Image (cartoon, rainbow, N blue to C red; front, side, top):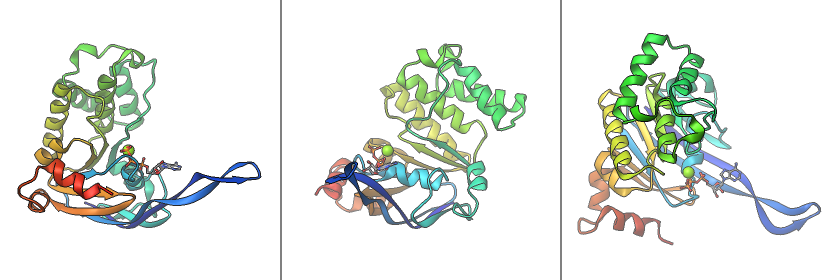
Length: 252
Ligand SMILES: Nc1ncnc2c1ncn2[C@@H]1O[C@H](COP(=O)(O)OP(=O)(O)OP(=O)(O)O)[C@@H](O)[C@H]1O
Ligand SMILES: [Mg+2]
């Protein structure tokens, strides 16, 4: 279960005003008074235009960024009070997860598995299953530096899942991945759901949302503009496609 209450983050951004040492920085709310609740075992999708605050929200839930106001609860644990327990429960993939260029795919996964103190036989069988499912078997001994964007993305996904977290947070898992790769990742999300885990992912692909999300959350300029299920989203206008409904929702 993931619940956020009044979650807000204020950042400072450069403004046109000149200060003594160059441009002044003006505070703005990247995420503002955001509330939602994702039930255990559900797949939720978070949508919205570039810069609307999706990554900032996911980072706060994962305990990577401290909220300015409000908080997030992960299986009832308040991230403000116990970020370490939250991190242990979560598998979090950012859209720029750093991997070590000099390691190959297998060494990368081994490194993170050992960091999480997972026994060899446990992580090896888990990794092999994921490599097979994500169709990665041809490049397991290639160095990260030599991988394509999509191959790196899949490696990041395996890394995120290697400690078998109860809660999975994926920030744009299919961005930069080819069409076949996207469908492989969508299938993996379905498998994750079947295993009873709670999953939240951000995306710009409305077809993925329609196919796999139980719960849809739309943001615009840091605030929530929709929170409901697939049917409720479609019922906003039964004659329109998901993309059309979404575009009207976030249009200025
Ligand atoms: N560390 C930071 N310092 C200042 N501003 C930031 C910081 N991180 C994010 N922002 C700003 O906060 C806003 C929300 O950014 P965020 O990355 O959460 O958007 P997003 O919805 O994930 O966008 P995208 O779809 O492009 O990934 C943007 O205006 C961004 O420039
Ligand atoms: Mg983002």
